[in-house]
Each structure stands twice: as C-alpha cells, then as structure tokens.
Length: 219
Ligand code: GAR
Image (cartoon, rainbow, N blue to C red; front, side, top):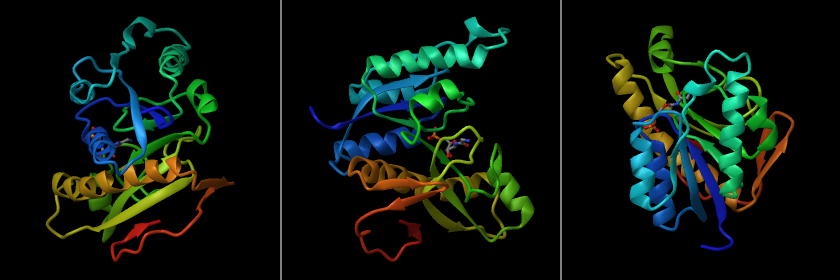
C-alpha cells in the first residue's frame, strides 16, 4: 500500500458513500488507501463499514466541548490531530453533518472534498431533495466540491445530473441521486490521486483526457 494516496473520511451516518469509496479502492479503481474514518456519532454505520474494510474507525465525541464558545474549533483540533496521526493527505466529507471550521479548512485547503445531493449552487444546506421538488426543478443531481469557508460553496470538481419526476418524493429523488453520488465521489478521488485537479480561483480544471461516456457526468 506504500505510496498510495492516504484518505481520511469524516462521516456521520449510513456511510453508503464511504462504502462506494471502499468498493472502488478494493476494485483497484481508486488508487488510494483508507487511512482512517472518523465520526461524530458513536453508532454511525460508517464506522462499522470502515472496520469491515480493516481501516481504523474513530468516534470523536463532540459533547465534551458543548457550551464552549469555540466548541466547533476545539472539536476540529481533535479531528485534525487524528487526521495527521494517520498521515491523511486528502479528507472526504461523506455525509458529515457537522460544519467544519477554518481549523480543518486551512490545514486541508484544496485537499478536502464534500459530496452534496444537489446541483450546487442550487439548494445548499439540508433537506435539499425536498427543496428541489418543491421548487419544481426538472433536473437535480449531486456535486463534489472542495471545502471552503462558505458552506457548500467551494470550487466544483464534478457533478452528475438526474431527472426529477412528477411523482417523486424526497426519498425517491434521494435514491436516484445517491446512485450518481456513488459514481462521482470515487471518480473525484481518483482524479485527485492522478494529480489531475487544478484549482483556478472558483474553478477546478481537470487536466488530461476524460474517458468517453454517454452519461451526463462532468468531467
Ligand atoms: C448523501 O446523500 C450526501 O450527499 C448527503 O448525505 C447523504 C449521506 O449518505 N450529504 C449532505 O447532505 C451534506 N450536506 P451516506 O451516509 O449514505 O453517504
């Protein structure tokens, strides 16, 4: 495994995106090593998925910091320590339902990716599949972007689109989007591992040829 990109994943729940990364790593489609998975939830299934893969899985409890004015920063210092201890080079927010602070953002500038279930910059935040249906958009999708100080605002690496159907519920739309999430997140990691992502201001330029394909995935 020596020489492979070391990734650290922060996840709060189910961990299906983590699983997609694990599967891609195990299949040799992503040249990376899962160095550590960290969760702010003790019972996050993501932790079990990491253990099954044989990767270190850490629960870091935010409760001891509650009430402090710098609660988020203090928590992130603990996360940063753990990431550094495991020599993490690229951080993935995979269903991580906690706002990250400059403590992590500065340490991993252009080295931390988030997956979000909408076509950003539309519908940042939470419950976005419900918001997309209520707004009446005909196309939604998902976005992988680098993490900056603005929530869901960082430079966009890759997006995939799906149709929104008249009879969609937030759950059916979320399921359709999730299939694409599982495709584009590993792809973004592999592009990073290949050194093909260059950030130019707000834009991420992907160098080299993109593989041909008829689906609506960019790049
Ligand atoms: C995914 O749909 C991800 O895009 C979303 O949470 C879900 C996590 O699923 N993330 C956000 O909404 C972040 N704002 P998973 O735990 O099965 O990967």
